[in-house]
Image 1 (cartoon, rainbow, N blue to C red):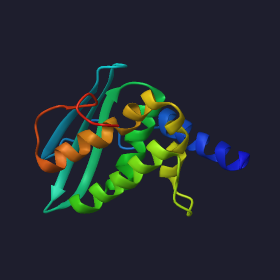
Image 2 (image 1 turned 90 degrees about the horizontal axis):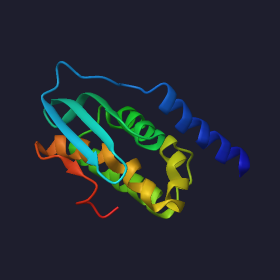
Image 3 (image 1 turned 180 degrees about the horizontal axis):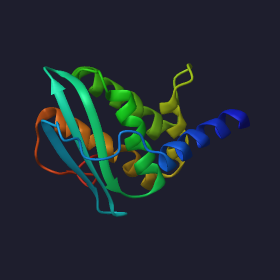
Image 4 (image 1 turned 45 degrees about the vertical axis):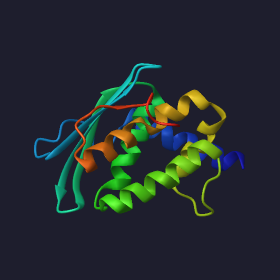
Length: 150
């Protein structure tokens, strides 16, 4: 199990050091902001929807390694998905970070299973996801971790 934990730690470190899809998306037709006032994490998510499908996604912002790595990984997981698929994937991710129980198959999302042991970090891990879900709904209000029961 230690090897798997090491692998998962490497996934988080890699996404933090070399974030995927970081930066403003000039072709975005949906944008949402996320704010975690508890620790100061900020995350903007930019989407270009093609119908109900996420054609392109990016993020920018600042915060701890967990929030930035989670937002990076989120962009890789949501690109090409529909809004319904994105919501379902968020539910799976939320289950992982709140219970520590990952699906049987190895998934990069499971890298965040250890977050459940640090309840304050759950908000860090889910911040980008909340912003993305708001963007998908066309909700211009900032997603704040204070209004979500994470």
